[in-house]
Image (tube, rainbow, N blue to C red):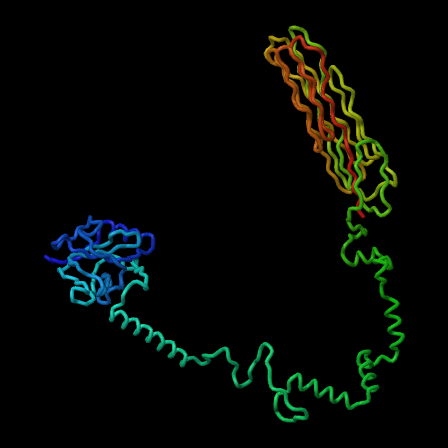
Length: 499
């Protein structure tokens, strides 16, 4: 059986396997030597350190054996300035300080310089692994020594690399692509050349400076008046009617100070720019008018189209008379009014606008909201009011219906949409407790919130918010005073004018 050998430790084997599976590298950084505690030790895979470590330092080289691809050769050089210990064991450590491999070796003494021996000690450890790709050397070149063999190998590698570069350079057809060819060069940038002397008539290159000087000399030898007339004639294309041509061109120019008001036909100009449709409408918003009360709409003189949006007035929530000791009441919410939106390119010069008022509050069924209209073009009825439900304090359950919804109508529109408002919610009575119905929403408003009453109390209906929303219903428990329903919010019209 072999007396001296190296093995991979259990921790080392795990790290190598992990590096292989993940495709990473295991960095071997240091080699340690020890005296084995006075005897040559037997390597053990469970070791995590040497038996008695004497020195640890960076590895000088870590290479794959050229004769055996599964063998890794680690080398370290101990300088003559260190020593005073026996070497019977060696170990390889990774960057984390983990003992990766351990071996025993024939004992040898490394003396110190003051002992009279000034030799360096070269240590070599050969390790067989399953995958050399997963192991790499990590060293600081400033703290390790190089062996003669290592230096010779590196010099040879550099020389071979330089020889290959020179061979490829000599073999290339055009190795200096940064230089222009002598035959038919194609220059880029701003090439410069010596300026030839005046009067030169050789094959020397003519620079721009030479050409400019030659032209100046040619013009200077002619009469000044002739030179001026020639320049004017060339600039004007030899036009015999130059004066009339210039005056006609100046007469047709625009005046900057008029800011385009001197354009003969602004509509044609805009159409030629592609800014108007076939009817001449540009689509530019020029004015917005909001009606929250009745009035009259008068369009601008330049208005080509209008967009009308609006909601009607919501329905009121129901109220209730006083309740007895044995009855409760729950009231439904009023409905939200419908919404209309339409485009008109044909419309009167003056349009009456009506915003219907909310109905009067009652101690019973809620009143319908007033109708809102934009002339005869848009009509939006008001939302319907909520109903009342009463019940004895011992009855199981009772409901009061909310206000129903109504739909707008349009007349003469180019395009448009209408949608009814939301119905009011039902009021509910249950064993002496009352919960009113919420008012219906509109597209521009929120219905009045729910009111709740219990233990002999009463709650008035909550009003709608925004525009066109229904009022909430009232809620009464037993022996409660009469309360009114919630007031609906009024309608609105929003009119946008486009040129």
